[in-house]
Amino acid sequence: MFHDATASVTPPAAGENCWIDIQQFEPGDLGILQERFGFHPLAIEDCINKDQRAKVDEYDGYLFIVQHAIEAGAAEGEAFTTEQLSAFIGEHYLVTVHQKPIKQVEAVWRRAVTDPRSDEQGVDFLLYLITDALVDDAFPIIDEISDRLEGIEAEILDRVEQSQLIRLLGVRRELIALRRTLAPERDVLAMLVRRGDPRISEKAGFYFRDVYDHVVRAYEQIDVERDLLGNVMEAYISMMENRTNIIMKQLTIFASIFLPLTFLTGFFGQNFTHMPYQSRSLYYGMLAVCMGVPIGMVYWFWRRRWL
Image 1 (cartoon, rainbow, N blue to C red):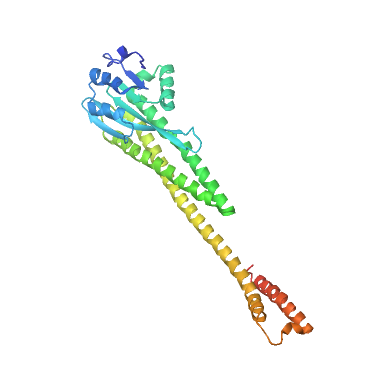
Image 2: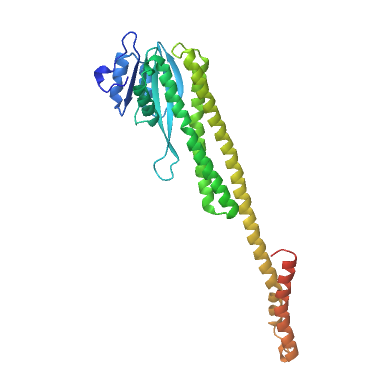
């Protein structure tokens, strides 16, 4: 199955199945695959370049498949990370190539080592197990993003803040990245299911169809979260506009209250031949007006439910 020694990286003997896993490699190390297995140089180059889109390429005697593993991010503020997994599958061998360790591949490897029936089920079944693990591990990440989105929505309805918009934009970037990763994965599985390739047995094809259903469900769930994100963004904009309207209404009310006071003080601040304040009754009357007008206006605004 797994071989660490370079001398053991060879095609399997007649009647045997072989799984070779290569990781943490240097670009020049993959030349041994071209030399001993006859893999095409373009496929080897795709293994080295880590920005490949998920795809299936058919070569003479084998399939070259590129997929991506999705894992929860370890750094703060990092929702998930992706790692490219390249695979060569022939009738009796499976060669997987990835730079960093992938927990899904390691889990399938441990199962293959402990289950003696793994060799009997064929290398296409091992590829199914790896693909199934890669797709299923996307669901917890989608659920985590959904929980964060619902939390932001609850915060917006309680009190809208500028920081919430930044977090919403971060969620949107994550959903776009997830969608960009899973969309070609769906196409890969569709090709494996429909092409009827002899390296994918009819029995394994049933399992790949189940994985295809999973990736379609994950893709649809991402679309649902994108719709929810749009609703939350609209709620944020609506709450911000409502908050702005409330502030403008309050400022208008305050300006309206002080408007008659400004008129009164401006009017009696003029120069008169006979000052009105020389009359004590008029003096107290003006004080009463200056106090009564704003109080009356506040009471009127309150009765109109503007306050």
